[in-house]
Image (cartoon, rainbow, N blue to C red):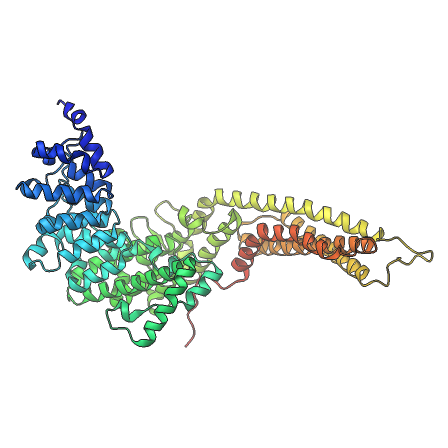
Length: 598
């Protein structure tokens, strides 16, 4: 095919890209057909190219008016060689301005699919262009039921619309769609997924998937959500005042607005989940409910979205027995190491007793076999260091071991392996890594602690200022000297204790069960004493300089305090996260929520 026309029409192409209508106006006057002629390598008309820039708005308006003036409206929406017309292109790039111009000429084009079968509405949702998606949906609000059902809100098109809207995070739009077209929640998209299944696969939309820090969580608790406005009710005076205050605060502190948006997303996701479950239940169709809620729980347990599972179980309790394609909810929760899902399932004694006997018949494995397997990579890496990863795996194994029948502990799978044998085999590499990690940390910490012992011991016999003739220290009656002595003693004792604890790790037998409590305890104590010795050493050093230099440099005390804090702060910044994680994982509340006794 000859593409010389692409070269010949470069001035028009460049004008469309740069919003330069004046340079091509006379060209179109002489040859009006050029306005609707494909002039690019991809067979795009000038209109499509201008729309695609999302900035040549004047060019588009002038060109559309000129095309209409020469009675060539039928060529306004010519498709490119890729099968998309200008409105499709506007939807893909989020060009709401030019979309308004095009829709004014032909609203019916909103429902015309491209060569891949995607309408502009679907393309807007797919490419996460919220503004044009909202506009296009508004323009289709008064379409007839038959037309509407055939193109936008039913079948694969309806499934794509609602699932892509949720994928894009447009939960407010999804709520509006469901409010007007509730049956859309049962439709499957092109990938055979429903809206609830998509929600189950996106934990980041729910509180359980939040990664906020301490201060952000604190702000999160106090930020209000205008629920009346979200539900379409008229706001009262108090809510208006509150909304106004927080709007000002959002403008002054963008980070607070970000936290507000997160909380709003969490509210909308939970409301959306509840609305979908309620709509499905109203169908009074067991097979439909079983299929949609079951597939959603399957996705939720795989991705770790307990809110979806909890709502599904609350809506239809029997869904815990969903076992399609070899899937068992409790077994999958253990396999995927989803403790929040596990807690939901086993907070009921009835469910716990029944789920304890479930078997994977294909592999002839029980719950303990599943707990004996190595966690998936995305779940095992939630802990820092191989030792804590090993500890978390042991915690899971011990928890499941506590509720299965005694006979299950020795049961063999189809490969004639008991759960204990599987655990040792599956975790061999992790066990070796954990052992090496413990030894490396202990060895390096021992060196640091030994250096502090040497300095602290020497400092006790090399006192600042020396001794008097009677042997008493020269600065014995000084308060700063007492600070030096006490700090030096603390540094010596704590560093010695640290060395002892780290040596206890280096000489340990390193049995797998030791990673559950014994070894993390020693590591925690060793790091605490090491931090104390480092802080005490800095205090003792600062006190010594203050004693020696105070007569010459009277202002020396304050800078020394600041400088001495630097290495302590660096150590805390680098090692405290590990220490906190060790303490929380070993001594903190169990990740498995215990059922309260009635």
